[in-house]
Amino acid sequence: MSAQLANFPPSSTKRLYMTRHLQGIGLEIGAQQTPLYPLLHTARVYYMDHFDVPTTRRIYGELGQIPLVDVDVLGDVHALPFRENAFDFVILNHVIEHVENFVDVLFSLSQIIKPGGHLYLVVPDKRYTFDQYRKVTPYQHFVEEWLSGSAINRQQHYEDWVRCVQGMYFQRINPADALAIAHATADLMQEAYSIHYHVWTAEHFLTCLFQLRHQLGLELELVDFAEPHSNLDNEFIVVLRKSMSGQTTQSADQGVLGYVDSPTPHSVITGIQVVTGWVISTAPTLLSVNLYVDDQPIVSQVQRTICRTDVYAVYPQYRLHNPLSGFQLELNCGRFRPGQHTLTCTVNTAKGEFSLSQWTVEFAR
Image (cartoon, rainbow, N blue to C red; front, side, top):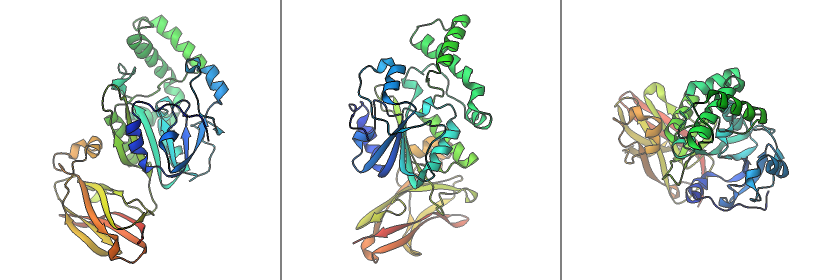
């Protein structure tokens, strides 16, 4: 691990809050001058990058003498050199926008994360960066690159970057000069310069993740989201969790979608534990949320009482009849013997009671 730590960025308060999900042994990819490590106190982090520090300084002269993290592993995010289930968490801080094959990389990252582990993504929102004149990358564009390879759109990406970023934003080139655009594009492609290949708004990014999960089977579920707060905070943060084997997170056939945020699978809990999550109905038929410990009902007919804006960002079409999608309920661990127990969260609809999530935890005194 590196001993050199960069100064906290302006948005470090938000980043610190979101790191509460990260524990154990993790990997950060492409940290360079802004590692997330200073914000982590309960984790061991290794660093992977495409180049070592001297090579990075030579290629990106604009970094000057800014401290960079020491690289533990040289590797390519498109061909990760790790076994399956190697890490408790993986961090990409302003890296995913530099990835050419977005879908392929997400599937690869999912493979090296342990079940129940987390992927922590910090992503620039195009509305607040030099990408502001570019259009968001359509979901089908990502699927096309996943199926056919990223080379099919590479020139298009560079031309868009030159025209909208170098031209319209920085005004270093005339965006209407086709010949100048072509020359600048060829130069950057020859150099293999790392541009923002894809761009998102926060809402669009969440929508893409939802489509990847439900259309392509991506085993990464949204557990936390933080949007940009101002023009001085140009990033959003997404925390995803790899699905646990046997854990149900949706009952779409019954017209219900939902997730239990905490406690997490295999965690140790004690005292009064607050169980939190969200649930929405695809039709106005949801009646209540229930919790069981080893098939014993604990809390029944709990109404949804929290407005979850992160959920509505992904499922805006269901907001009208789900104005309060979040729920909280108390679980008194002291009522049960210490040891491992199975928690089951169910929902009641007009069609009956259906399981939303089932997982194991350990009760401690």
